Amino acid sequence: MDILAEITPKPEFFADAETAILSIVQKTRDEPGCRRFEVYTSEARETLFLVERWDGKDAYDFHHAQPYVNEIFKRYEGWLAKEPRIIPLIPATP
Image (cartoon, rainbow, N blue to C red; front, side, top):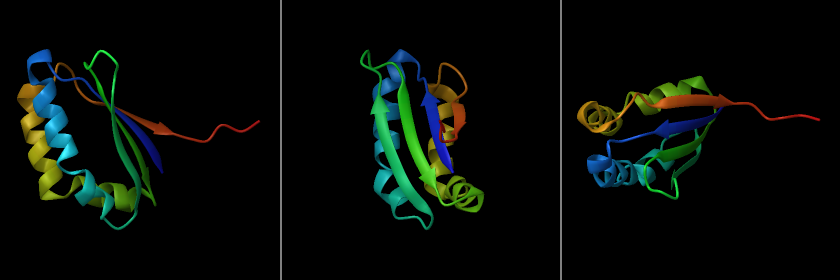
């Protein structure tokens, strides 16, 4: 299961949102079923992108049930300019 998450904080909270998500990278990578969890920013530093790979929906759901993830979601309530965009990805085939 591959996911691209697009997170757009309000400009004044961009650094806070970036710091928060970076603080859980290693914890997330250590979770069972996590194959990839990487954080990127747009060049203008206005959007965060998470590139994720999970063994399946159970591993993805387990991740979202973690207290450290829910803590960030709670902070996002005041920080985000819009709802995160979660895009499931499927491999392109010729």
